[in-house]
Image (cartoon, chains in turn blue, purple):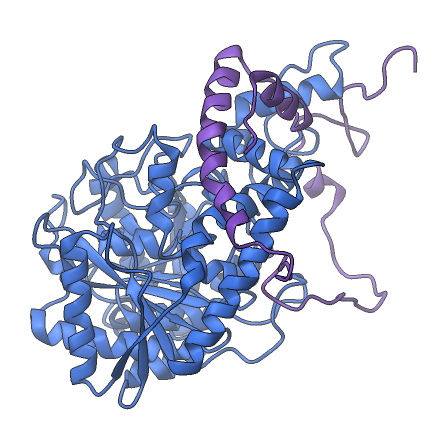
Length: 498
Length: 99
């Protein structure tokens, strides 16, 4: 059962072929068998998950009408606070902290009867592209344990690829849902900014952060998307409008007459040969399904990465000021007579990792008097130019597409000491966050040269998320016909119950 | 193009409330030079006729009625505190002895 889609699991639950308790136990057994190798989870909530599962079973048995994913297990990125469950955001500064409330996303999951298995590993405060920046050690890619599972949400994507969970929640500030999905052969969606509440999402860069669904199929992602999306009065940037009909779009999967714009600047030099060939093949499949493929140009995208590495650190230097050792989290150096300031200084020195400190310093500099206009101010102007590029491109195309990442998964340790090389991973995913639009990644095959998954990125205008699901479902169906089985069926066995 | 000296980084660390080791200051000042020269590219297109964007949505103030709604109990709010006393967060001294 664990290799099936979440939708199939839900159907089996509804038909009475299994129970949520059994299904949850199967996933817990799988985690026990393989997570020593994968390390997708920072915390497994065995008792909480089983009791939640029994609760859903009882509701169903009593004849209550439950939601479409009720009883299906899920892995939660550790950046989302969950009442009473250890939540660290991958940082030592929050080690042992048990939040006193639920994030809105978590509350919605619980209300929908979705069973939360535990918290998944991530780059500290979601800063990274490999999960190597976690204070609790890296996660390993189930396709090749010596490689990275992407980041920052590498734990969520790896848990899906390792069949430890059929659904996961991620958050995406510059690609942290889509890039991990790409390198693990799974599906990841960054909804329109404001489409999913940020209440209870530990903030990294507030104008860019967006939670979204991770899954193994496009339909599963859509089902989860509709559970977590919607207006929330507790998030001042939450959009007060109806949720786009993504499940309907994923069921129909129609691209007839759809104009698909290939972004010229997000391809070519710097993109691995196998990534490019799988991308081109997918374009042909979409054309065969009746889509019209056009080329669009977004000349300012080449400045997106530079602007991102000013805006995100600037916002993070402000957001992470809350970790001050006063109200929650780590406190170091609180000896007799020590001042609050020295306690803060020592706590933040011990509690934050290297990449987090690097970004706080960069952000503090970019915002400082005398440099503000040259750095943060200029980056904000680039943001305008990127939004204008998207506007023009969407005048001639319904959705835009590109490879999700320039390369397949690299080796753990390969780029750990070269921040700029690491940042380049996000070159194709960042423009979406800068403009606040929707973006997703779905698997489009294995690169011939290394046998590793390649991601296909689809982007849609704000609050038109259903368009990406239509295109993704059509492509997924064509690829499935071509492959004869889901891509993940080719994953090397991890041992355990496979 | 500005470069950051070790003293500049030490000052930024002080402003950001991080007590850094000598080794960290050395490493960061050389890394910052590389990163700053890469991100300074934004200045090539950030001309005076381009308006800055701080946020992807047109933001407006969000208000609600002045109605009491359920919130955290003092026990829950203090549950993660490193130290507490009489339903308050206990913090190290903020002002010096003389102040």
